Length: 80
Image (cartoon, rainbow, N blue to C red; front, top):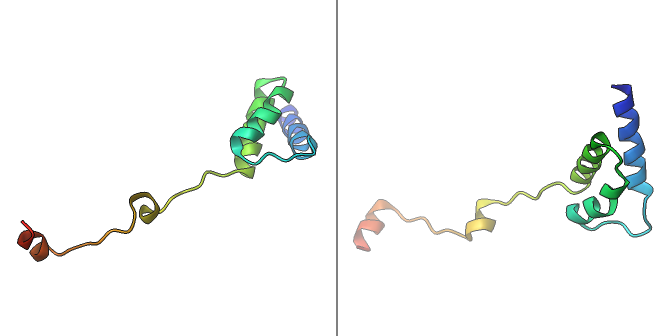
């Protein structure tokens, strides 16, 4: 357990100070840092830290489907 924590902290430190150019996306963060992971635990730490730095965006229904106009049942029946 303590070894996992040490690896996680070390990997997190590497991610935060690794390059002068910061990654601009989750994918770029993974690409720039996964090669530094020398174990499964370190790779999972890279994935975790990149996920924390670049959380997934959630979309509202309006963003996905556009602005919807809801009509009443009466209006729907008249439109047939």
